[in-house]
Structures are given as structure tokens and as C-alpha cells.
Image (cartoon, rainbow, N blue to C red; front, side, top):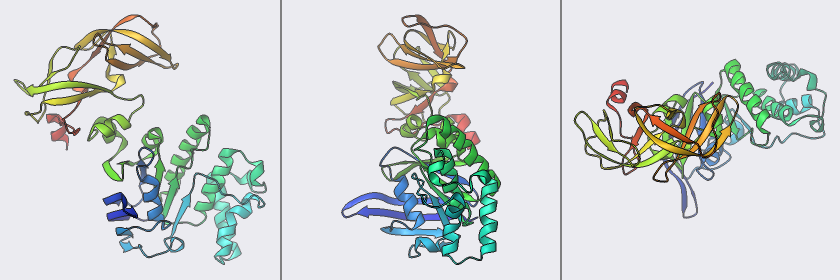
Length: 363
């Protein structure tokens, strides 16, 4: 296992800077996920860590050793790509062993590592098959096995599940989480899918345009997003956003927002004015909540155990509400949409979070 330190890392292509002044500490033995929209720099950052892309400035250190000038083959890490990149003419066993044989490793050690990878990934019955005889999930297991046999200090994953169908992605997420528990090796995982990030990571790094927006556990990012971008990016279904006014109240911040009655929260910042109030879909309560308004259902998405209600408020503002799957709803139905003041997230005119008093006590 190994930790990783990035200090003032920059990446430029000619006169175009795509990453500037990035600092990050990746802890020994953690499963860190880099997530963000397309073009945010997550794959570029992973490739710089791997040594496949030169950094323009700053330092990359593995176990306190700066590796800027060290080639990828000497960094003691393994990378799993989006494409399986298996040798089609070789069996699974030969695919797993090939890299070790090129390193002139003794046959007994090669066999030991290959057999151990097959055991961990439960692919023993596939060892004599060729890649064309494998399913997509089986091919991805072999690609991961090829990384495991190197016994690296770090595992790097670059969107390894994006070629799989939805059901298989769910299965492979579970298997990767189990693999992490078994190996205990530091893993850095790149994805654009925030569901993958939330379900697998010990910590998440949210990137936008080469800048780190927030680093934290899945729970921290979901319950205390640092800014509007993180609030909107993390969470499925997507969070609801409302324009509002905030003034000093008797005991905290007085919030006035269209459609709903005014309410007060125990915020620390008393001088805010124009704000954005965000509320998670599951925080809205049908026919309940101390802050409520009548709405009209525009669309019902029945998902079995839960229902997504797309509703329209009197002002025309839309609200997405997530509720249990037992009640019956219909398009055009009138419904009460309500929430509690403690369920809101408030962001100032710069998009930064306005903390509650209770949040400060927990920090």
C-alpha cells in the first residue's frame, strides 16, 4: 500500500491551462474516487499520477518520493482502462501471466500470483478460455486480474465500467468494493457517474474545469455540499433549487422564497441577501411538512419501491419529489408539497454554502 501527495500540480497544452495549483493528499489504503463532468480533468489527473502524461508544474509523490521524472513502469502501480485491452490470441491464464513473464519473474512466482488473482476474482473456470469466449463482465475481471498480479502499491481505474450494461455495472461495483476490502491497497478511481462514486468511495474528489470543488466522504458531500455545483452534481435524483432572499431574523436567518411561507434557520451568516435554497427530493413530504404549498403533478415516474413526482408550483417553478411506492398518484392531481426548515441547504450569491450553527458545532 502507498499514499500519494500532489502539490501545486499544473497541466497546460500550449497556452491553454487545464489544471492549475491542484493540491491533494491521498491516504494510504483508501478508495478515492475522482468524479466530475466530461472535460473536468479527472482522467488527465489520473494519467499524470500514472506517468502516462507529463505534468507542467508541481510534484507527484508516492510514499514521500517525488516521481515526476520516473517512468510509468517504475512507479509500482497498475492501471485498469475503460477498454479491456486483452490479447485475443492468448488464454486468460496467459493474459494474466504475460506482463510478469516480460519482467523475467520466476515461473513459480508467476504461477502463484496468477492463481491468487484467479481465486480473488473467482475466474478459475475461465483460465483456459480466449477473450472472445468471455462476457463483458468476465473480460473486465481479467483486466483487473492483470493489474492484481503485479501486486502494485497503487491501483488506478479509468472509468472501467462504462462499457458494461446497467445491470452488470451494479454487479461490478459490488465486486470492486469487495476486492478493495480483500486487498486493502490504495485505489484511485475515475468516473463521471456520481452513483459509482457514492457507492464505492471512502472519499470523493469533485472536480470542475481542473479545480477541486470539494473533497470528503460520500456522506459529507451529500449532507454538506460546499457549493452549488457540488449540491447539483452529487445526488440522484437531482436536488431542487430555488431563488430566495435572506435577511437577519430574530434568532438566525429569515428566508423568503416564492410560493412557500417565510421561515427561519439558525444560520451563522446574518448579512446574506440573494441566496439559493436547495432541497433534496426525498426531503419533500407529500401532504406534510411545516413549510408547504399546493402543487400540481405533471409527471409520475413509478420505480417500484419509490415514486418520483414532477410537480408544478403556483409560480410555475417545478419541484421533484421522491416518495414511497405504495400510494397512487396521477398526472394533474393536486398535492401538498412540504418540507422542514432543517432540510434546506442555503448558498450565497457566490454559490458558497451558508453554514448552520449546528454544522459549525460538528466541524
